[in-house]
Image 1 (cartoon, one colour):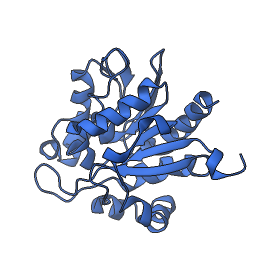
Image 2 (cartoon, rainbow, N blue to C red; image 1 turned 90 degrees about the vertical axis):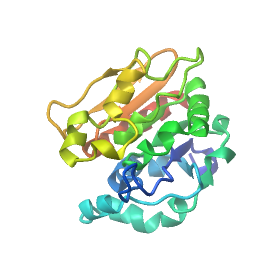
Image 3 (cartoon, one colour; image 1 turned 180 degrees about the horizontal axis):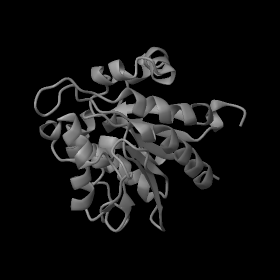
Length: 236
């Protein structure tokens, strides 16, 4: 493809939350956007969006990944794109070939109950395009529905940040609903890595569409690879 105008269009939806339910600083988790982004960036045309049109990075994730080249490069080079982005209310889902939602505790504060978020992602999914989410973001998709009005998780297999991992970081009270519980409540079959913090990515395909979920920060690179593969399969 010779120019960005011919590249598949990918919507990356970020949280606008900067505080957890119990008042701790939050945002999106830096490696959970940087690692998948590194796998797709040169192959797609990306639009960043969020409920309020602006987003922040979880400061704890910056400290945790301060030696990670991809995370620090994204933090520096893409700040103008993620800090001020497109309000979700202005997004037409028919314009996009895929959607990706990075994690962090922020999505479990605002995206999980955002009707516009659910509408936009439902539009992408119902068009047969890939929907991908990682960690806590995978615990926000229950209100995204297929063409029959069923939850994207109903009868599907998926992963997200596990209850055990949430307990280990001491943040059970920081979210509106634990991601693992969210998937199960919406009829999904939840799976996870053999050990906490291990890589796990699930690609669930059926006649409705492609759902790609990653469990935790360790799953970012693999999720990006699977998302790019799905985009190539669905874009003519």
